[in-house]
Amino acid sequence: MTPATAKVSKPAVETANPIGWVTALIAAIIASVLILKLPPLAHPWPQSYDPTGRWWLSALLAALPVVVLLGTLALLHMKAHFSALLGLATSLLCAIWIFGMPVTLAAKTAVLGAGYGLLPIGWIILNVIFMYQLTCEAGLFKVLQESLTGITQDRRLQLLLIAFSFGAFFEGAAGFGTPVAVTAAVLIGLGFKPLEASGLSLIANTAPVAFGAIGTPLIALQAVTGLDLLQLSAQTGRILPFFSVLVPFWLVWAFAGFAGMLEVWPAVLVAGVFFAIPQYFVSNFHGPWLVDVVAAIVSMVALILFLMKWQPKRIWGFEHEGQREARGTHGHSRSTVARAWVPWLVLSVLVFMWGLPTVKIALDKISAPKFPVVGLHQMIQRVPPVVRKPTGEAAVYSFNWLTATGSGILVAAVISGLIMGFTPWKMAHIYWKTLVRVRFSLVTIAAMLSIGYMTRYSGLDATMGLAFARTGVLYPFFGTLLGWLGVALTGSDTSSNVLFGSLQRISAEQVGVSSTLMASANSCGGVMGKMIDAQSIVVASTATEWYGHEGDILRFVFFHSIALAALVGIMVTLQAYVFPFTKLVVR
Image (tube, rainbow, N blue to C red; front, top):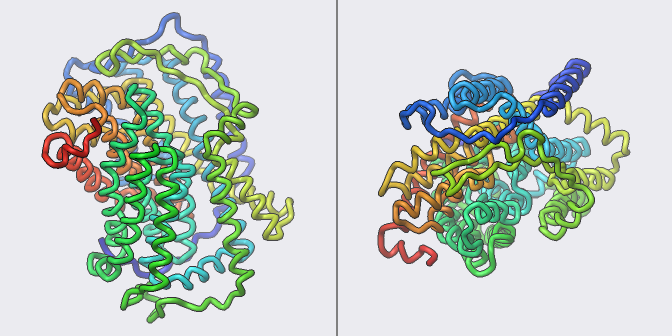
C-alpha cells in the first residue's frame, strides 16, 4: 500500500481502420447466426462433475480456463482481448474434450454468453464513456473537478466521497459495471493516475455489491435456493456492515498508506458508519431493494456535512501540486458549476428510475422480447449433488434494449448533451469516436462472458464448487470463498448466486450449519471477488483510457480481494460456530 504520486496524461484516441473492424463484426454476426442454426440434440445432456474419477484432478482441470485467463493477463502482460479469447478457447477445449459437452451445445453457449456481454454489460460501458467524453468536450468536466475543491482539496477525501459513497449509489441503482465506469472516469479526471483510478474504484465497489441493482443478487439467490428473501436480506445485512466500515479505511490505506489513512480517520469513519447503519436497518426491516441507495445517500450527505466543519491538518495532494488549502476557490460562477453537475445529476436520476422494478416491468412489456436459444434451452441438465433432482438449464436471451441500464445512461447523455449545447450531428460524431475507443473492450467483455457461461453450462463451476464442499467443518470459510470464486469467474454476484446458491444450501444442510447463513455468505464472499473479475477490470481500464494494462490492474487489486474475502470467510465462520456471533444468524 503506497501513496500515489504524480498525474499522468491520458493517451490519445487510438486510430483504427473502420473497414477492418466493421468487417470483422459482420463476420462474427454471420458466424453466430450459423451456430445458432445448428440442429438440436435428440436428448438433454447431463453434466458430469468428475470425468477423471479423481475429484481433485477434475477440479484442477475445471480451473484451467481461469488459470489461462488470469495468468496471461497478470504474468504474461497479454492484451486483455487476447487473454479473453485464449481463456474462451481453453474453456471450450475443457468442456468438450474433458467434460464431454457436445460441440453444438458448447458453441451455442459461447454465443449466448457473448450476447449477454454486449447487452447489457458492454452497452453500459459504451454509453458511460460517451457521456464522459461529452462533458470533456464541453469543458465542464474540469469545472466539476475544480468545484470539488469547495468541499475539500484533500485527494484522500475526494477518493472517499467519489469512489465509496458516490459509487455505492450507482451500484445500488444499476450495478453491472456502472459504478466502476463512472467513478474511475471521474477519478482520472481529478488527476489520479490510471492505475489508482482503476484499482481504487474496484476496491471501493465491494460492500454495496450484494444489494446492487435494486437487490438483484439476493432476488436471484432466493429464486434458486427457495429460502425466504427477507431472511436472506437480513442475514446479508448482518455480515456486510462490518465491511462497510472496514472498506473505506482499506481504500484510503491502499491509496495513501497507513499513516496517510490515520490523518483522515474521522472522515473515513463517518463515511463507513453512515453507510453501515442504514445498510443494516434497511436490509433487516425493509428488504434488499433500496439498501444501497438509501445507505449511499446518507453516507454522502453525512460526509459532506462533516467536511464542511472538519479538515485534516495536512492536505494531501499529488507531488506536483505543492502546498494546498483545505478548501479551494475555483473561480467559477454558480451557474457554471451547476451546468457542470447537471449531466451527473441527470445520470443519477435516470439510472435510479431505470432500476425501479415497476419501471422495468412496464418497459419490458413493450421492449424486451425473449429468445429461447433453440437447441440449448433446457438441453443441459444439472444433476445431484449440485441440485436435489435433475434440472434443465434455461438458455433464454432477453433483448431488453430499452430497460437495459445502458439505455438509461444513453438517454441521460443525450439530454445532457443538448443541455450543454451539442448538436445531434456533433453528438453522433463523438459517439462514433467513443465506439472506436472501446471496440477492443467490447470484444474482451463478450469473450469474458462467454467464458462465464461456458463454466456454468459445462459444469466446470460445479466441479470446483464440489471441491470446496468437501471441507467439512471448515465449510463456512471455504463456502464463502466459493462465492468469491463465482464472481471472479462470472463477473456478477447475481450469476454467482445462481451458480452456487443451490449447492450452498445442500452443503450447509449436510454440514449442519444454517442454510440461510451459507446462501448469504455466497453473496457476501462474492462482493470481494468483484474487484478481480475480468469484466470489471476491463470496465475500469476502458473508463480510465488505460486499455492494455489490465494485468497491472489485476496485480494491484488481487491481494486486496483475497485478503478481504478471507476476512468475510472468518466472519461467517464465527457466526456459524462462535458465541456471541451466532446470535447474528437469522433463525
